[in-house]
Image (tube, rainbow, N blue to C red):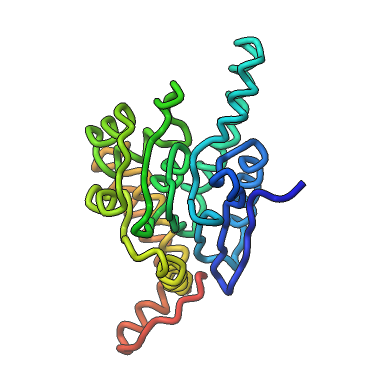
Amino acid sequence: MAKTVDIEQQGAVATVTLNRPASLNALNGQMSYELRDGFKELAGSAHIRAIVLQGAGGHFMAGGDISFFKKSLDLPADARQQKVTELVGVVHEFVTIMRTMPQPIIASVRGNVAGFGMSLVAAADLAVAADNALFTQAYCQIGASPDGGNTFFLPRAIGSKRAMAMTLLNDPVSAEQALAMGLVNQVVPDGELASTTLKLAGRLAKGPTQAYARVKELINSTMSNSLQQQLDAEQERFALCSVSQDFAEGVTAFMEKRKADFTGE
């Protein structure tokens, strides 16, 4: 059986490619498990310091594989509910790994970005979009509510009213509109997407990886913490950073007026 997720390493950067281009990289059961297991392995690698997530072909991801849901209609309601629950459970394990892994993740998107593809962009730490990217929630189009952390990350990125409108009305959003909303960080011509994303990933891969991990932890917790809780969390993580080799290098380099050479340690 051909793999649906390809992972390549170039230096300290791992590029994860959703590889079902004939179906616009739609998510099926096999891809769910491969994403979960692949990202779990990347999270534990000291050699990987930045990750790029992209789709094969001209599109990022068109959401879930509708053929899977069509087949599930032949099942009794309780069996169908159980099957869908199991699949979404694997997807949610993967999203949890994305958000808690130390390495920053860049979504590099073009073409169709729909359904769970939207969830991936919203859950990624940074996102770069080609100017031909088109963002659609798509869930209500098949009579479903979102998954993959979509309703957690999207309102935090673009605001609850915009998230509600995108989800209920299902109107497509252009790359430039997504940039204005705050869903993506940058929009570039399609021909420059790969080089721009890899340049950004390379920059992150040379940074203080432990500090990045603690930034992710702090930003993940900020919406649910009180001010005092967040201050305590900042205090704890700053102190942890202060005993890293990268902290010593960063402080020394600043005093010596040179560029820091971080190792991620």
